[in-house]
Length: 446
Image (cartoon, rainbow, N blue to C red; front, side, top):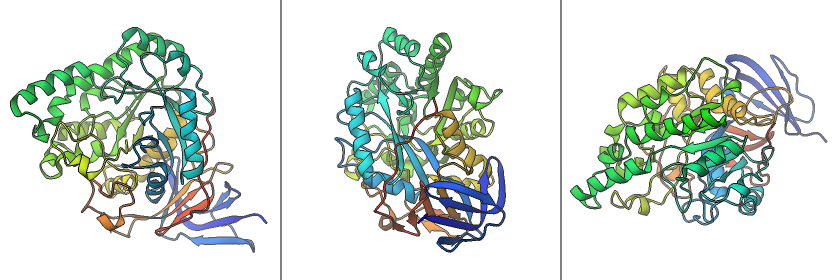
């Protein structure tokens, strides 16, 4: 018997329009979209009256900490938090333990996800100063891309050999995603503040240590190299207004060779928040000034910045509550990213259509993901229902991250995600998870 679900009377958001309609799901796929669809006998009907239906958020940058760092998080716990937060697909980073810097280690992560991930998934292959041969074996149809740390890396993943970098940029047609902060600048600044304060540097100096200059220097060099070599470059987590000047918005995303991402935390917090939040909002790159925050919004809205992401990077509270030099950077975000952006929709900062473009459509276009990111007939039914009139407050008891805390604790969001469908399966329904089914490895049209 064909399994079908009919979502009725939803406010459907897709490709810059919102319209009232029904969506019929059959065997993982969106079968029909229409203003009126009648339910057949064996169809489960969900009345979505008053709710928005959006394509699932495709998060192009997460750290789910498995293998090797599972005291902080794992693929099962964090993918569960992700689907509760409206994220139906994630792309995870290579800096686990061991790092995904060989094809075998990369496939090990895919193997874990096939058993444990509630959401759809892909992983990035990690480049180093000495694994070019292995990097070039990466299958563009089955792997999201290559990740390079041009600053702030863990283990041996800092790629600081200029000739190696040029070779990587020249040798692969795959998307090269980069973390851009100039290591030399940061080392010099860190030393200066350590000389003043020892290890207990006040966290408010974090954006001065990991400065605008450090970010701009690194990202401008990466862009220069991409232009020289013709590489397909994607710059992760912009944090400064100045960097946004390096990107263009005069051609469609499909034609861009150089693209950019911004993360939720850089759009939400500014350097005044360090006083209250301390190391809980210590990220690399750092949350910077209000001028930077507003500049990032401006670039997101005028299409110099192409996608939104979380850079979800959990650590235990014990780790985060250390003194500045010992507290790791990063925080958990996947459960609350969509509701945080919907708050900005309510405030009139961004339209819901534009938010969907940046969270769902554009990651699918940018990474050439097959049949996802849109509400279209024939596409996988990765869908999210949102009640924008159901407030929720982030509190310890409703946080799903393994680390058990959130930088949004105490924040009341106006919207709640009520249902999340992954490949047509209702995986999350008003707080209840479907534990029987897992997500799929995504594929790429390259």
